[in-house]
Amino acid sequence: MLKKISNIGDCGITCDFGDGVDKKTNKEVIKLFNFIQESVKNKKIKGILNYTPSYNKLIINFDLGEVTSGEVIEFIKSNDYSKTVFSEKSKLVEIPICYDEEFALDIKRLEEKTKLNFNEIVKEHLNTDFFVYMIGFVPGQPFLGDLKKNLYHDRLDTPRVKINKGSVGIVEKFCTIYTFESPGGWNIIGKTPLDLFNIKKREASMLSPGDLVKFKSVKKKDLLTFKNE
Amino acid sequence: MSNHFKILRPGINSTFQDLGRFGLQHLGIAPSGCMDRSLFSLSNKLVGNKVSEGALEFAYQGPLLELVGESAFVAVSGKVNFNIINKNNKIKQGAPNESFILSNGDKIDILSTINSVYGYLSIFGGFKLDETKGSVSTLVRAKIGPNNGDKLKIDEKIFFNTSSADLKTKKFEFDFDSDNTIRAMQGLQFDYFSKKSQEDFFSKEYKVTKLTDRMGMRLDGEKLENVISKNIKSEGITKGSVQTPGDGQPIILLSDHPTIGGYPKIANVITADYDKLVQKIPGSKLKFKLVDLGVAESAFQDYIKKLNLF
Image 1 (cartoon, rainbow over the protein chains, first blue to last red):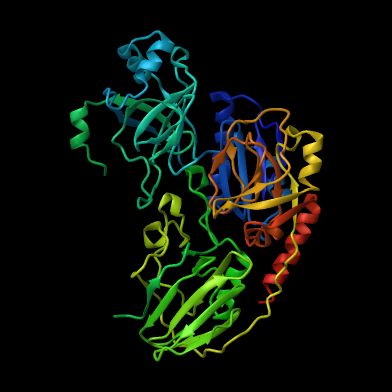
Image 2: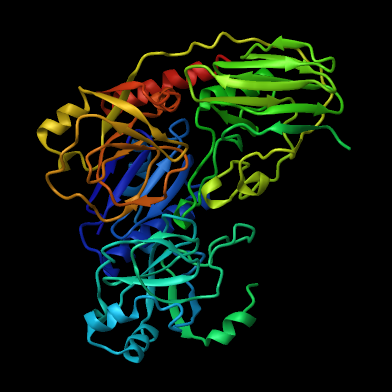
């Protein structure tokens, strides 16, 4: 449920759905996100520049020369977006992952914490139906949930200076995929050869908030022959 | 070979920018776009372009460019020290905020911005740039935009559209605001900070540090004490947000900001003062003045009126 709308400066608002970091809360966020995206596309509201969902909030930025926060808030409040039919439904994306020890950098750490062995960890990860809570920090990087409780672990105490593009990491109930080489503190369990982000494509990011993801195990030798479209 | 500029020196941080790339922040793509919208608009207006036309943004030291081809009608906006060097190596001091004609073989040498950071070069007809998702803004961090998403590099060529029109040079006395007061509204997590820190932020001086670029401006001043939590659940970022990590030193997020972030925000700089803010060089001492939404919105109307004077 939308709990509160507040201003962020003079050209932004935040729609706050409460403190929960769970699928139920995030699905409400995504519903409003879809509604705003649809409304912008159908020109039902002008001046909207960006609409950025996160776990429990949707932040909307607008051009103050076109629309004010008062008008955007009024637009949201006067629409029952729960009944909106969206033109684009969330899609299911299968992501290949190689759990070879060359890539699963933190498997030992996870085995110790979870008391599961390597195969059991892989099995749990493969059996999870993931939901895209949000995308960001850097282009195309998805935050997927929810992991099974027995896989929960904290961030590394000392983040790595460099994590390779395609690395798949987990922290607490979340799983992420590094779309660019970057520093990071997640527990790395494998690597995907799939390019999740390509600015030259019509859909630059393969995933969008609200999509569904399932991982599929591939062998190390398959990485060499894998071709991105 | 069609008309172009040859880059003899790229400058420190020269990129093509327009008003920004929008509608993609939910996919992790920051808006980017010109840092100083006033000066960006001015340089375009001076050469008769539409205000949203892509321009060359430079910071501190700008590029040295040689014109190859027919003449070009250009303008440099900002507080900028630059020279025009003609074919016979005669050097003439350039006049910023005024349009002028460059002839074949002329060089434009943008030496430095004066007590400011950003300036712009516009050309009548516009630079020949490929749009990426509806914008020619460059986001270097993600390699998005013209020039393969990168800064200008030496020996590259910059092509531009040639148009024949009645070119009338134009001059504008830009009113540079040297005042160091920046107006800001309370941030989303204003309540996370101690009463003292809330007061400190809006009364003490904060110095702009060298750790400042298109992504953010790090400040140095009275430490801001967070009494609730040093982290929040990551949420979408808005340009001008003043986030404060655990060390208590605020960072103002600028045009190339990360799309989401997990630090509490004590304040948000108002749109009308953003251009003034980004022009502050390291060492400048800022004072933040607390205002409410009504003040911010009416300041924005005044800001737009000023842009429309160009």
